[in-house]
Image 1: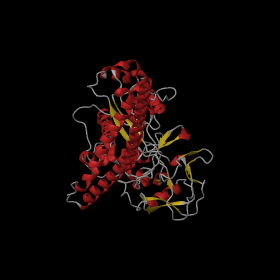
Image 2 (image 1 turned 180 degrees about the vertical axis):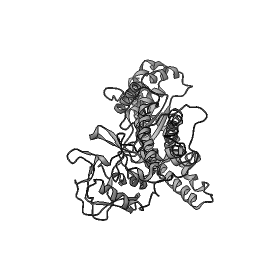
Image 3 (image 1 turned 60 degrees about the vertical axis):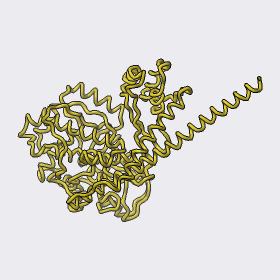
Image 4 (image 1 turned 135 degrees about the vertical axis):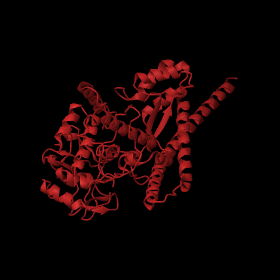
Length: 500
């Protein structure tokens, strides 16, 4: 089931061995630069590090489409202070289970009203206070802290106040964290989402290894390996990536909101979760009416299909997501005569020589064009390298649409060539997808392979559609530019003949 989260965009979390001042500086910078800083730290630990090698399920939670624990969850929430609801958990066509209107719901109506006492955050009380004290004494950042908290409370079973909530969570979240390396290589070979998924898996693995080596191994009585291991961390991070929300009206606090996280996403809806000061609860305001029996939706944010697959494990239908985009990777080659000078100009603004830029149906960012100018610029333009790098970094006070007419055609042709190279990869995957090896012995695994393959094909079709549109725009601009140059040459020839 694809469930609500506003948290996705990633920055690197600090190593847990850093001092409080180092952590605070890193986190404050990340908050200013990124909407939702969530990426975990990558470990460079010894050979004893753990990696994702299995797909075993954790001993808690339920199947993603199960309603077995829904009634117990609803009763516990009501007994714990959740007001009477106009929605109930049902099996649904979009998302397997979701919240469905039980009564008529008006447009502009506030729903949920989940009190802060039913929200899981870094301030939540632990069933094992000693474990909490150790983690906070070591300045563990929010995301690893919450991931460890989930595992600790899940292992406490009925003695945890969250047992009814955890029992209703999916035993295996829909997340690319559960894709194997061979599945990523096979199904996402054409998409940049593959690289993003590998980065995320490595980051989560590194975070667990840091915790294990620096804290868990020193306090085995608080963090036994049979409970706090790679498999349970994969589960807890999968839950966080798909359900954690950022609440703007609570100073950007990140939290899990039981009941609210049963709402599914719709690209046609703009409303999001937030704290309502007047009612003192977590709410959302409907932007359309609902009839009894209709599924109620919220927005997980303006995310591309690739981002939705990465965190939530689903891809909207092609052409239905107005926020969809595809990443185009551009690079300065080491064979460039000015590679050293260009890389130094980029480094000054914190950029590597390989950059990924989002292409949308409506066009591409100014930063992409600036980077393309830098890639194709000749040695005689060395004085402009820094200006191009600054424009590509988006660190200017105001965005400038810089233009270099003498190399504009080369820059556009470079972007077109990169687009067409990507299109050929997508086309090859889609043409070969019918011949992918699905010969596995387990029927469930056959279903899994077909499911992953379908997700990959849906993603590739939506991303290739954007690339085709960009290809059309680039070809038209280059044609117009070249026909204009040809007209200018003809006029010049005419003047020459006239003067002769």
